[in-house]
Image (cartoon, rainbow, N blue to C red; front, side):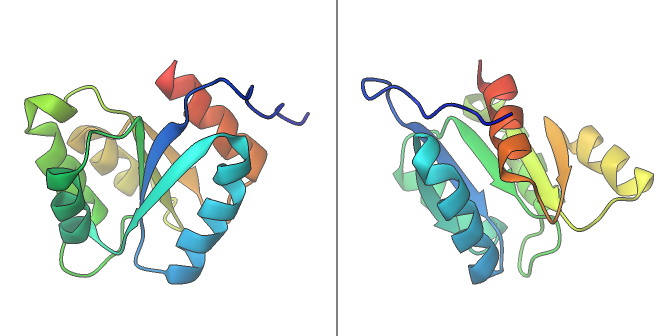
Length: 132
């Protein structure tokens, strides 16, 4: 079941993608942009934190777990420690699927978990669930 595109007068959904893979960031941008997402990108947790200092809080953050410098667990924990991000939806998109990693992400404050490779329609539906 395809998701309908957003109406022309709907405000864009600001989305920060945090992944060290340029090709994964590009895939996400291509999947989300036609569905009303204004996509920003960061290559790891430290780059995401730097971007967030200079921009308004996005509607949703999608992060990988395994990244250099600051991984997804560290990023989630640092964001949840800030009042401005206490209720910001954070989805984990990763190749990891172990129950231990999912539990660790939940404990850090992740809103949801999606395993790569992702189904674009399921990702869009998951984002809509967490932002509305």
